Image (cartoon, rainbow, N blue to C red):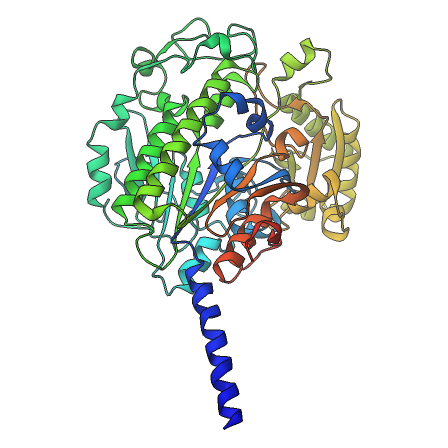
Length: 543
């Protein structure tokens, strides 16, 4: 009898724990990626934010203040893939937005897929899928864990920003096709026809409503955390002589891709938030006890950043308006899912460097690397050194691809060719480091730029020589800015967790982008994505 009593008591003791674990799962996980958001945008523009957007998440959630990408290159495709797979390009295979496919001997785009058809448009803009991504996302693992009952929906203006986070098993991914259409579209990878709620949104005129005048949402004189409005470091839009407020988007649209101009303004983020809310309602996300996942990428911050640069009034206004959009989404989640019933994380896919021309005007070493001239010099050297033409097959993403067929024919040793080319490249102005395939495959670099190069190096897809420019040097025109390096301006990005299961607090402890997916997986009690290299950030999880 005593044995039975003890067994019964043990069963009673364990039952509430099991129930508690189930109840602690959020009804909905929302993964937000703000494209091209440097960490310091959070602190620079803090006083301009309201209480219900970024500040609500920071003050009531957990912030990692020393969060970094641990690989190169820091581009949109690899960034989104790494956030949601919990690993780096070395494993998930998305080594750039596009790259040279050495087997097909042609460039490929990270989500292009000619085997699928566009849904929602007659153009090729929907011929996309995640088939080039080699690993699962935490959204995939949630689908598998719940026997496909937990939904996954991906939303972004950019196709790659919607497709890669949502993973291989997503119910749907939607992205914005501008041009003359201005519609949200998808791919036959997910469906044969758009759902009614998407068609209703497309026919609502919402996109057209944003072809209006973009002026600062606050008095421009209060924008003290950015430079003067009129300067020599910004592109602006075709059809307007100066890159200064205000911008009549309806007037400028015909010369700037029609509806595509919306992407390059903060209104693209507003449109994304509108569509995300429609997706939450249309797909009934977070309406039962089985966790759903919404991946949400705000892409307009990247378009505006490339166009106007880090120090622009336009970037400051874009983030003030994004704060309002995020507040709107959080309020909608409170209403539709229930306050305290969902979990949100917010991060970025990369940062950005200040416009080098601006930095030079302030006596900071910086400038522009002419990759065209560098390739010409390289090809001349290769021809003279190895007595062959066409040894260099491709140069892209700071990688050099060699012609293996030619080397075999001419009986050239790959290691010898790599070594001599690497030595030549290192002699060029504004090249700081060069690595060969042999070094990256055989050596183990634990940290720094070397470790970042190795984490971003996929043995099958990457090139044979990888080079790194000096800090502050970019391959770009002398206005606007870009990203892609392993320097802190590109790697240091926000990471905020908020909502159910999250403690309040912050830390300066080092964290890395691949830590996000295993953290969410641990919180949900599901398998980590199958190529995970990150670790759960247990410091912010409630006991």
